[in-house]
Image (cartoon, rainbow, N blue to C red; front, side):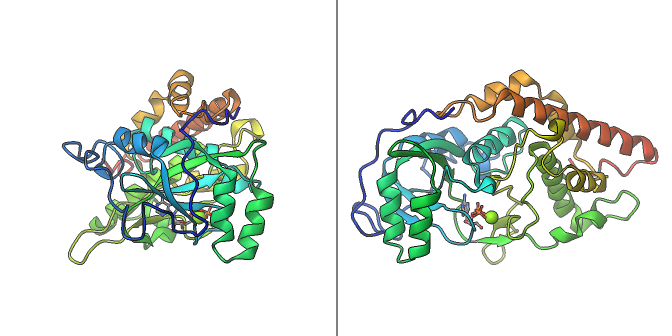
Length: 330
Ligand SMILES: Nc1ncnc2c1ncn2[C@@H]1O[C@H](COP(=O)(O)OP(=O)(O)O)[C@@H](O)[C@H]1O
Ligand SMILES: [Mg+2]
């Protein structure tokens, strides 16, 4: 159930252009100053998720623009205090379920993965979104905002996602996943990090039933400055997840099963976290969003059904490879 208006104080309306009063270009790349202090490794990109969420859920919106680079309707947001976000409103497209974005974040956090950008359920005035769309100069986008956004009131619910700072780039080599995760093939030391990221990504996607990971452009990382190591693989764009159909086994069970079968190398830490999931732990995590539970009971049960399938698969693979090589990742 959507509880409109449950989240944040209503932000001030923007000026009638896509650049709004107190903010402006150049501001807002930085996370809050308290977000990283003494907390490296604790949350998303080493930041403190709670400090990020406190701003994302409540800070007034200073400026908003249409987002580019995706196929669904989303907006770039500049929040008071110098934080950026992406707002994915409730909309018709099934691959853009804002509750799935919220649930993916909560699930990643529960599993101590921290690869999904922090996300907070929040409402935005429809008029503000429409004005940002109208001032984008793109009449087709403007029309989409008018016709595709859902919600009965003047407040449109959606997911406010922490904006990953800097440039994003596709992670190279992801199409080699089947070979990298084949326990009968050698794994080069240079490929271990990529293979570990892919193993966790594929298991995470099976768990949440993300049917839109491999359509292109959805496996990203931060572009590194010269001389710096590449950023870690991020699990972004989870809007096409959490079906509860086919007895919990997902919207496209044969595709998803085929991908799961390819995973023959695992992180024991991740498997332990998966085994620990319960209906209660999932429900508690999902209820932490300010808009209320982001998964239904049926969806929670479907996650557990898919979890059971993952651990059974991992046990089978381990039994079939008594010589080892199945757990090369931390
Ligand atoms: N949290 C984020 N931080 C930075 N950029 C983002 C974020 N979320 C999305 N983007 C950018 O917006 C693009 C579209 O977002 P995405 O979630 O993939 O939506 P779609 O469902 O339309 O594909 C992404 O490819 C990425 O470039
Ligand atoms: Mg995308």
